[in-house]
Image (cartoon, rainbow, N blue to C red; front, side, top):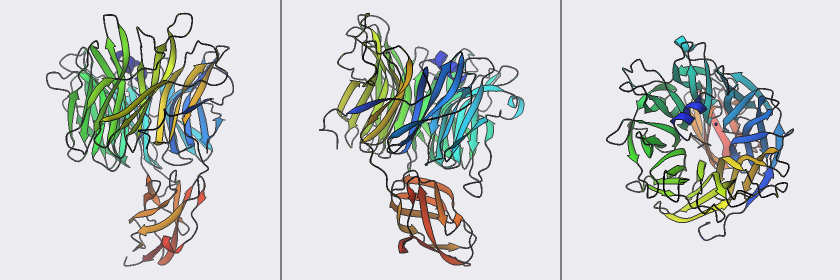
Length: 568
């Protein structure tokens, strides 16, 4: 699950790709903070947390005509600025464990010579990697990266768009595959996104989002060109199995083949992913359910109530309990409510027929009475039917009575997927923003559970200087060192390679697992109480398995023993 986004239209998507128990409790309390930074003119686009209060937020700073990449780091609730030198706009980040985050973005995003950028964290150090072009005529390329998901340490996929010297655009995949050890992964491998077999001459495609069920098992979505009419786009799904990518389909509702997908979220431990976007010439919201077991997909158009006549979904999120949510915007093209409003579609999988519902989001109490102009651009769902979405709207403040402010929408769902409660509030502002001019924008959010979320964006303080903003739900308690209570199986061959499940506590953000003195590979943190690894080779012996997180290494106990033998 990761922090996700999309685009407002085909035009804006193309621009982005080439170049943005609480049911009865009181309204959740959010605490605002000016994001740490060296000066002014900065904005945070996305955030991910490997455990509550341990996060990384990414964005950009604009100064003297130069856009520089920007990162803030949260350690047990204390945020600090990380200095970077790359001249880029970072748009997405994924953190599978402490000290192992990966962020992506675009160098020179506003020029025709833009390039994708990857920032890789190793402990406290960040390394900038310029994205290489995919095979063939795209080996020398310009392009951009818009999304990333890391299913485990050393196993990531980044997506975007590449352009060849012939000015032909294609979807772009960069895959990082674990090597023989955690500290020696193979390099990033670039590949052109597979498209529909027999695709004709009108090449113009791009990928906007990616989500992984497990290491080497991911789905990426975007758009490709319709060869029967080169002015139209069709949806594009690409599927990865065991690190091999293939075309996964172009589903649309019956009666049209036009559309695009802007975001996807896969349910960890399941075989379902939910993608979202728009379809038809007039742009209507669409949800696509992807079955990763059968490789099938089914598109469902979402109807809109009056006065809305068109709309699109920009971001998706699915929790482990199979509650999913997609958010975006619905447009009213005429009448007294001319403008737009936030749009939410919910799906509950695994409880019979999906309970999909599309409805305009509630608006804050101070929303402009004529035009809300609310847009939801990011969402995050945690188990327990808890989903938070963020964006912006027009309020009644300022001299024009139409100033832009940030919105936080919280929904609580029942076990069957129906809405139990919804609140829509104006995001709180830092102490140095007291003037009624607002101009606040939230663009990213992540919820680890029902009591901890982080939302990021920017705001204008009283001197009209743009600064990053961080809104936090809940308080963070210092995390504890991990504890191992069980390993299964508890024995294996000296050659290694056995998948071992480790049970215990405080595993969130685990960065390393050792069998004696040897590091395991393919670390996958399933939850704070369970993870899996592949056992390294070892001479015949009984060793202790120890888990390391940012808060320490598990102590040796009789419960963490693993026995190597020549015969297993």
